Image 1 (cartoon, rainbow, N blue to C red):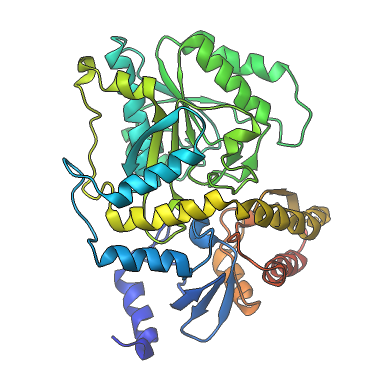
Image 2 (cartoon, rainbow, N blue to C red; image 1 turned 180 degrees about the vertical axis):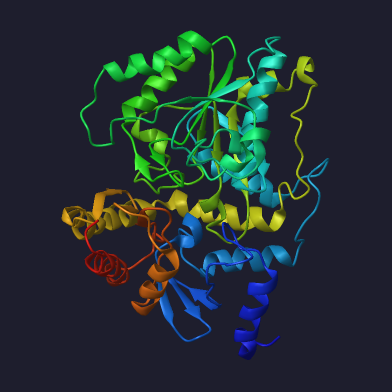
Length: 433
């Protein structure tokens, strides 16, 4: 098929290709992308759209970036892939060197995974093998907080919100985990010490069977875009230390500057035992993730008591092409331009979005780093909203009651204004509930 046949391609797509979170009987409409560059998507139908989603929060440097393109071109002429069992290569070494320059001190043992969800699976396996190695196999359950989302594979699904986490259909097949109530205090509230006692209850009662606590630090992403108080995370770290429980943080959505800090854990000044990263690791060029831990956890998992090896090995682990692009993306992060870029985005989002909370159709407006969220009183008709946004020349994909943007860091003031004006126009078109 040539590009002139894009309408035929759309018809074929609708009949044969199953897109995420949609039906094959009555699928949500799809739009045919011809190309992408900078912070814009070009549709085959001619529209030029400012992208507010960074391709599900990954394309932090924008599209078709010359440095990332060059890294990919140079690597593909050498080798696109080679198995990682018994072999290594320069792209993997370079990527991990760059990554461990960014991670907190001591977090320098890296398992390269092939997607964010898989990195969570690996983190869970690490935590379970850790306690088997310490001859405490009864510590095999996980504690998390409601409102979370950690991916679509089975162990990751088991720590997603059991009601609103998109996976309630699989409840009968998932391991039953422990769910504390979601944090009551927002990022901007005054801290209330009694919040600690609510958390402590879970540790006092269940610590003998707890392998790990799994949380998204500071921002709960696909589970509701909630931004909670940093002291909650700080208390989790203290309780994990006191009751001998590992702390796993899922920085897949929040890592690499999205919240205004390099990693969201920095808002609470804590370091986890295991950290998952993905999405922005390659700036959205291809799938790659990593599960990062410290020497103590890595060596304990590697003890003969638990088999002497971490029991996971993806076919495409350490893919050279992905690692080469990730290494260059991380080099760009290390250069530090993201700090001013994210700060500028945050300031503009605060100015343009927070006042919309006064509209009767809006329940709440919140901004943190390069994340802008309007939580509506009613669920959003995604198909109708996207048609309206495309007419405004923007790409925004809401879900549930959430209208939000997480744009590339390289977005211009004018492009970001186009996004926020489109959001404001959508809100103004709504009737109060």
